[in-house]
Amino acid sequence: MTRDTEHIEQTAAGPDAAPFTRSERRDRFVDDPRKKSVMLAMLLSAMPGLGQVYVGYYDLAFRNILVVCGLIAILASGAAHRLEPVVALFMAFYWLHNIVDAGRRASFYNQALAGLRPMDLPEDGKAPQPMGSLAGGVLLVAVGVTLFLNTMFDVPLDWLAQWWPLALVGAGAWLIFSDRRAKAAAAVSGQTES
Image (cartoon, rainbow, N blue to C red; front, side, top):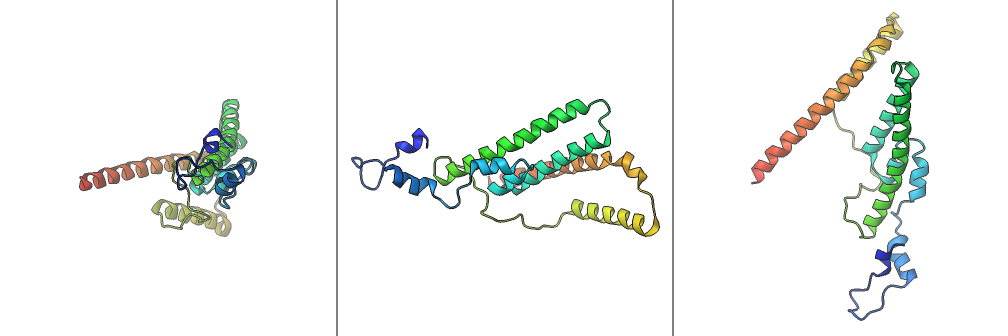
């Protein structure tokens, strides 16, 4: 418990009321069934993103696993060309950051439940809602057609070994486009409210 929680007084009983006893504080702040274990979140993050899933940050978890898988793929393919130590160091840093981030998010989540830190909590136990995406649909169709041509008509996939970085370029371009579109929409909605 922190010093902040030790000096919380009962407001309903008046200014001369005694502070909460340890057991009352424990009942009020610690035994919330929604509380997340910081150590469990960190332990689960040994598999990148799993600690964030435990706390409820699904989008962040998905990004973490994609970054780590992408870095592993770059290292395994040999595409880094003499930059392997840099990529490996970044991967180790990112992996450790993922573990620390899961612990911090679990701690902040618990503090928000106790009313000590104002923050938006993720929805309890709700997985991301499936929603349509033009880019995702096009990507699935392209991958499906490519694999279909390979299995049914023996179209070789050797070209993928050389051209796969274009997928990263496309994903980055889509993220930039989505960000610009969201900022433009926020600017338009801000102007209409004024």
